[in-house]
Length: 124
Image (cartoon, rainbow, N blue to C red; front, side, top):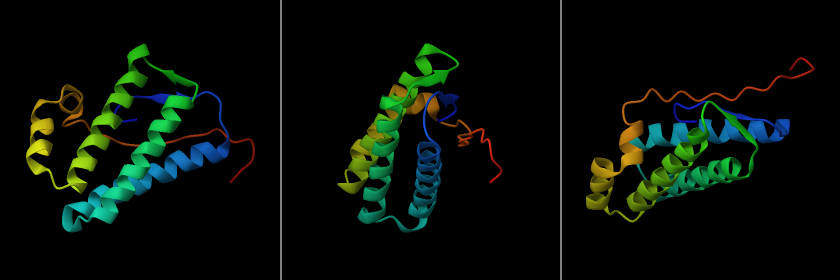
């Protein structure tokens, strides 16, 4: 997630499908919010971010480094904080976080491509 390779070692096809769908929805909401932001859209984004946090927090993950999962969680935390501040219309605090938060700045400019893969025994 977010420029880091994280693999779910155990999990059902349902979990993988949910992650994929949540990421697609989140990307669509962020893209749509550029032109027409609303509290309802941002609330939905916050809910999706929380879903992703729960999966990362509860899943058995394989990563390139021990810090990759921690860094992904920290980034999701800052995304949730920024989204919550946007909902409450606290733009000065949003600007402050975007300019000072080390986890946000570490991911800034990263090409964030999202993908969820699962090897299936039967053709889809």
